[in-house]
Image 1 (cartoon, rainbow, N blue to C red):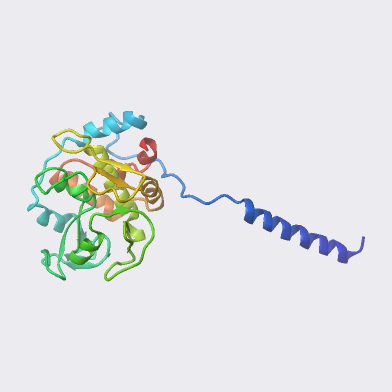
Image 2 (cartoon, rainbow, N blue to C red):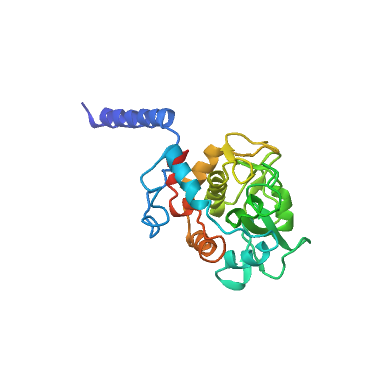
Length: 267
């Protein structure tokens, strides 16, 4: 066989293989969160380590339900500590927009930052009375107008950016946070679903697989939140925030910041 036909045969085989890969390659998904260990595993989490599914969720609920509670007014000063800009101690970092803004600009006017409920108040009638509506683990500083844009929308992907979005996007029925805090949002939502199980006179909060949940005690989409948890693991800012809430305010932890792999272990 001459050299020329051999080269032609190799070219055809390579082209065919390329086509087959393009037709049959599976859709890539985020790898599950890696297992972690913390200094709290033998103390705070000792009754949860090694469990999974409903047993793990129940154990974590019991653990994190022991907490000090803040009033809605107390959140102002707490957020100035938990969300302090690591590069400028006079500022807080706004969740969805990523903007660093003066701590003194808290309020309800354009240009101010206010208290964003990541688990929207209307999803289960949280109210601003002491309870889930004042749980610091899911309250974050945000620009007044950006907060209004998010409104009570469920979380999903898609839509368009907007003024001061920082890369966050929205459409008619959902909100997509900027990439740097997608995991943060997922872990806050899932914390709320474990902490509030229908006791204390509050609604049983749960994630589900849809948007447009309205006033029901559900927020979606769970599959998207799980993927965000895997794609955006906890960073130093989120870990510090969890520690400050534990040490100085509520004295409970968000277990998914310490153990992001527990998201897949439960859901």
